[in-house]
Image (cartoon, rainbow, N blue to C red; front, side, top):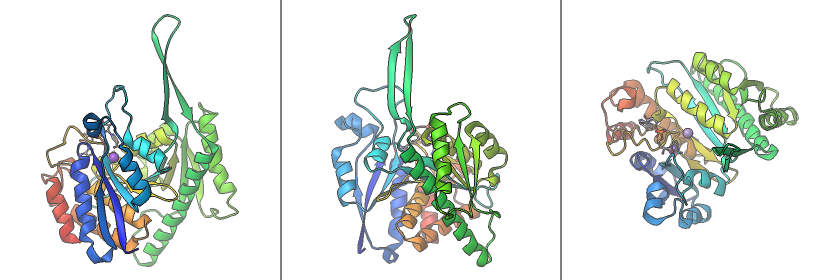
Length: 362
Ligand code: NAD
Ligand code: K
Ligand code: MN
């Protein structure tokens, strides 16, 4: 590659403040990367209000036809039904078949709180997010709503495979780190925890569980070095809060994965720290786990680190491992120093201060 064309979709709220921060950091890597070309693209609630479309065709066309990868900020979806509106991020994940949402949750040495180094692998295309909802009238004349939940063997199998592959990679990375004399939090074999509720939802969650288990069993020994365990989603929350250090890779259907991710973010200090990538077999889109945070938007106090780390994740999955590591080292150094922290981490610094501090470390 001589150029890397990146679609940039800040969308709404703090997405418009934190995505530029990620862009600055990428730009600062300079000649260690191919020539970067950033393509600003529209989507979101504000775009819907301006032009009646939350996800313009041009955005999808550009991503599909000419971008090498993308970064998404956050969208403000209203909590009530609005005719013609539908979340563009959910639609994008579908259009680009970004079937996995990979969310590493890592505690920062030096910050208070438990030590966590886990990754949540969230199925990204189905479950209740197919949004097949229906309002009916009950026998007594009151309203009654139904939703269809889709769990397919195909989607569950491919997300299971993604989780086991990730566990393998993480195991190898820890091995290398150990050999280099670095301290490694996780001591045991790599582990995949399957999150479900098949004690109640034995058909849907039952199929998810079975399909993920079959990935290990059908892999001709490839995953023999990986432990596999299961956790009902409610006890997953309990154990994650009591002893988060026991998790390595957790794989979950869409809705559970969404919910446990925000909980895990609380363990490491802030949603503003947790990155993700939406990944498919042929495209990658980095995205902070958090939403548009209307309570702090427009104040230049949003933590840009989730987005900056998402840019690093995007780079490493494109194969630019060293460049990604450089970003993460700079971020960790700023967090460890503690001089430049946004208010979510108890500091007084602005989005731009923290970004500047990270840029200086690069
Ligand atoms: P949120 O993630 O936007 O905010 C939750 C809390 O975390 C808020 O107190 C917010 O101030 C704080 N927070 C989030 N990101 C932060 C950051 N970078 N720095 C500092 N503090 C941060 O969730 P919400 O308030 O439930 O939702 C707000 C809107 O975002 C809703 O319209 C929702 O639909 C949307 N949303 C979008 C996405 C997405 O774009 N993928 C994800 C979640 C929520
Ligand atoms: K987001
Ligand atoms: Mn969420």
